[in-house]
Length: 429
Ligand code: AMP
Ligand code: GLY
Image 1 (spheres, rainbow, N blue to C red):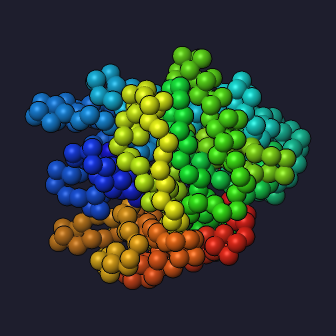
Image 2: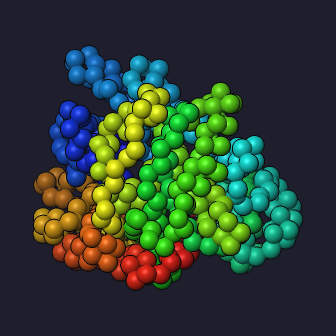
C-alpha cells in the first residue's frame, strides 16, 4: 500500500481483514498502520524508489503480489507503469490514464468525446480569454488550475476580481499553464468510486464529503472534514446512471485511445436541476469518503483490487454491503487548513476505539523520539462510526472523537446531520 493518510489506513485495514491476504506492508505508511517492517520508507514521487522496494522484497524471497497506490501524485508520476514494468500487478492507472485527474482540460476532452454530462467549460491560456469566459458564464464563477494543485486549484466565487486573480496566479505558475473556466453547477454533490480493470467497471457505494473547514459549510476549503455513506436521500438508480452515463463511456474512450484505465475512477458529481453532471474525476480513492465506504464493504477488498489489477472484474460477482451506515469525522490540527500546528501529543485513542462500532484511523501522526504519538499534519485522525443508521453512526463517531485529546484541535459537529434528520445535504464548496 503506497501512501500515508487515513484513506490508506482504511485500505490497509480492509486488505488485512481479507482472509486471502497474507500480509500488508505500507510505504511510507503511518504509526496507525504498524511499526517496523509494516511500514517501509519510500519516495512516492520517484518511481525508481518504489521499484527498489519491490526488488528488495523479491530478492529476499518475499515478493509482493499487488501494489495499491493511494494518492494521485505518484500515479501522475508513472509509479503504476514502473510497478507493472517490474512484473508486479498494480491497482492504479498508468501516467497516461492518470491525466483524467492530472489535467482538467484532458478530462473535459475525454468527457466531450465520450458524451459524458459535465459543466460547460472554456480552456484559457490568457487573462483576456479568462475574462471573456467569466462574462459568458456569469456568476458564480468557477476557475480551475488545469494541473494538479493538491486541492487548492479551484476557486468558486461571486467576485469577478477574485476569479481573475486566481486565474492570474495559475497562469503565472508554469510556462505552459492553462486554466479551465466553467459554468457553475448547482445541487448536492456525490462521490462515487468505480473500480475499473480497463474494460469492466464495478461501482462502490456512493458517499458525500464535507470540504469546508467550518460548520454549516463555512470557512476555507480543506482536503475534507468528514464523510458518510449511504445517502438515504439520493435518487434511486443513481449508481446505475453513473455507471451507464459516466464510468463506462469514459473507460471505453480510454481503451479506444490505447490508454486503458485500471484502478478507481472517482466520479465527483453534482445532481443539478437539469440532471447529473460530472464536477471532476480523480484517479484514486477519495479521502475521507473511503473511510466511510470501506467500513460498509462486506466483500473482501483484496480480491476486488486484484481483479481490477489483473483484468478479471467480469468474474468477480456482485459486491456485498453491510446494512449499517458509516460516518467519518476528521480531527484537524490547530490552524488547519492555513498553517497547521504539529508536534502536539495525542491521547485517548484507546478510549475512542473502545466505543462499540468506532474505528480510529491515522493520517497526520508520528512517533517522536520518546515514542509518544504526536500530530504531524493538518488532518490528524479520521474517526469512523458504524451504526444501524446515520443517526446511530453519528453518535458512535462523535462519542469516540470526544474521547481524543489533542491540544487546540477541531472537528465539525455537523457531519451527516441533515441527512440523518431525513434531509438532503446541499453541501457547499
Ligand atoms: P474539483 O477539484 O474540480 O473537484 O473542485 C473542487 C470543488 O469545487 C468541487 O468538489 C465542487 O464543490 C467545487 N466545484 C468545482 N467545479 C464546480 C462547478 N462547475 N460548479 C460548482 N462547484 C464546483
Ligand atoms: N474528498 C475529496 C477528495 O478526496 O478529493
